Length: 234
Ligand code: CA
Image (cartoon, rainbow, N blue to C red; front, side, top):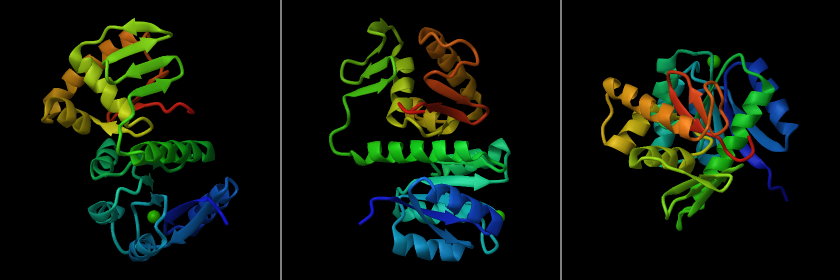
């Protein structure tokens, strides 16, 4: 009898997969490893993992293809673990449906934190059915029905658009939302010129929430990629 989270790790480099497997198993996760994309897809279907950790540079296919395949049938969270560190690679993977992106070389602490955040985020999404009516992050409280935000009990006045952005990020807390995802959900379209508009709104939101530049108490700025609302525990 075990309620360990099952993780599928798709990674062709033995030293990395051994390292990640050992690290995660030390943290009460159960890990199965696939060394190429085809094996990864087969194991995904038979093993039903809680989370997939996916390398992009696989011997038989590009990991990006695997994201597409998995997303055709499943919302299982995918964390990309890749040496590709350019913004465009991250954005492509996230826009295709990856939940998060960790760049090699990575720290154990970072990977574990992202994994915990991803699992919490998916649990929230699975809660499904009745959407939550409130979001709490330390001293921040969002009342979705009343469309009000409070910090330490004091209401923060946001514009409609600002509220919509904060609401969207909080519903997906723990997940990186790319500029284009946010633009599409808030304004209904996404083009490069609109990113500036989003950034201006976000600067106002941060100011109203009392965040100093560089401070990431509630919302993390994923440079050149998008934004991520913190979860309660990280
Ligand atoms: Ca590789």
